[in-house]
Length: 91
Image (cartoon, rainbow, N blue to C red; front, side, top):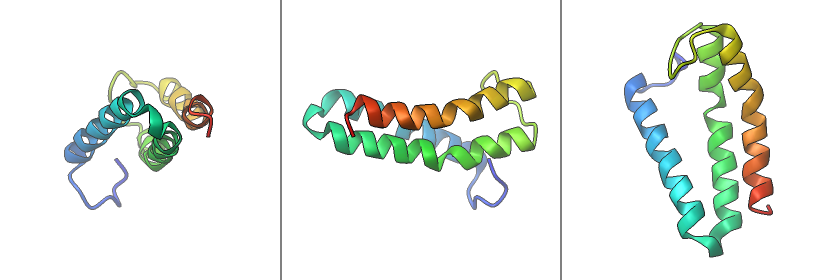
């Protein structure tokens, strides 16, 4: 979690996890809102990117990301998640 985020890091992780679950459920349960859900999901993936950068630059372990290489792969994969969210929902 970047140090400039004015919330408890554990709370942010829990809230972002809940958001991921809600977005996934929305993608499944709201087929008529597929495009809107795709944009929201892509926006979420973009919003959490600074946290992933912070985890890499501060060498913080978490969720099995215990090496710089693993953290770098996660960073490289984040734009792919954004693209996938948009492509898979035909946005």
